[in-house]
Amino acid sequence: MIEVPNPDCLLPPESELVDVTPKEHQEIQNKLATTPSVLSSDKNGRPITVPAPGQTPEQVLNGALLQRDRLIGVAATRVAPLQDAVDLEVATPAEVAMLKKWKQYRIAVNRVPDQEGFPAQITWPPEPQ
Image 1 (cartoon, rainbow, N blue to C red):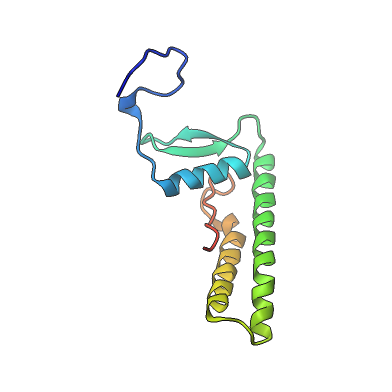
Image 2: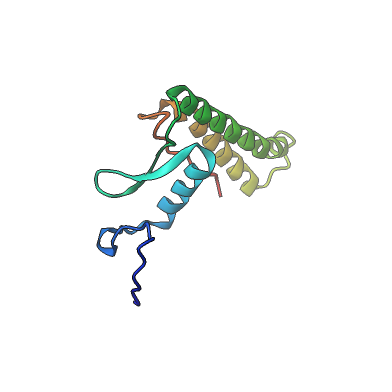
């Protein structure tokens, strides 16, 4: 590795960097993109997101509920044609399985407010694949 002095670098020293799994990275990126939050670290130096400075608790709550409602809308859009196929008895086994996954996802998203730490700390369920 080539090291070059960079006094403007905002990264911590290499000895303080932590490995982040692709899943953790995606969860952090999703949270940063969908809620008013900033990157921070927990007591162990692991990356976490925290509410953006200057937000009132009410703003944090409203942002989280808006995101929940948006994700439920996405799920409803995915469920509808799959449910139609099941109702009309033309669904493939893969469509039946995907319908179940999307319904489970929609339930999980709807239960996000029940998570400990809500709305400041939220773990959004991943979309079905």
